[in-house]
Length: 340
Image 1 (cartoon, one colour):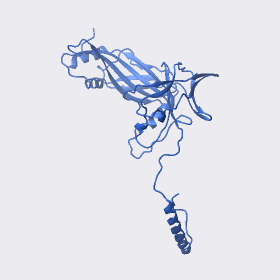
Image 2: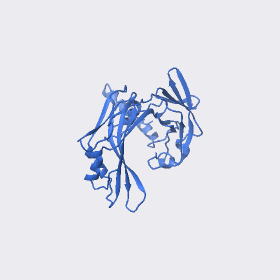
Image 3: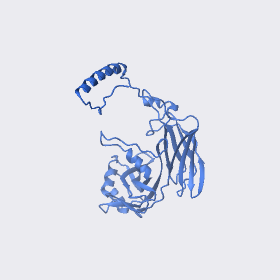
Image 4: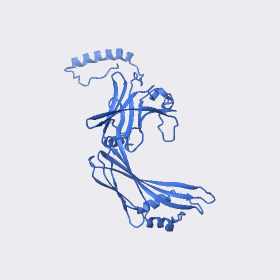
């Protein structure tokens, strides 16, 4: 151990000061000869579980990712190519416990291996990734506990409520981008829900000259995020947008192709709602604009790290208002023609 200066030492006389200087000089010479500037960045191995799981009603399969943290000398991407760097060997005893009133139902999770790494997938697995899953339907009226047993006296756990259903209340029949300066997307907040991310997806068809195949294309417009004041549900929520921005965004992806034909399709309003724990996790892990800000840790995994929570998505499809479609045809040279 290297010597450190005791800031609480206060000599009472010149004699004490001289005596302290002599003693200090002796010990500094002895201790400095034993000090080393080498730093060991890799402590004794410790099994740290990383868990990500999301309970979502109306999905046919629930996946839970259970892996372990790793650290070693060299390139982390190369270390990731070793399966045992992040994957537990064999199959862990992982289960969900559905709690509904006084009743508990145990759901054992099975394993599946993901082999095809796609663009956008996590960089920290290669070439295979083990996932735990169940096809048991998610009951919105239940609470779920996740329990992972790794051996004697080694258990990782978490729990979550389920985000309840919620309604998109506006638009009602058609979506209008042409005759008003603004339009709205409105909904009523969900019980157990906190964070709402909203987007529009516009569908259209495209037929290139001298090509018999019709292409199906989309424009995705992220409208932004809102948080409800509470997780009790029943709040009226709204995002305002300008119709003119719809045409500006669409024009940004229109290729100028001579004699192209395009047909306008419907618009999906999609609102994704996250439970309170997931909302907090997203906020804590969002990119920081400061170079000095210390990022706090947040996890709701007992004896591990990660997130086990709930989300829900509401989708409603609307045809374009007649005036909005006519504006596409008459005011923009993008090849749109009226649907017959």
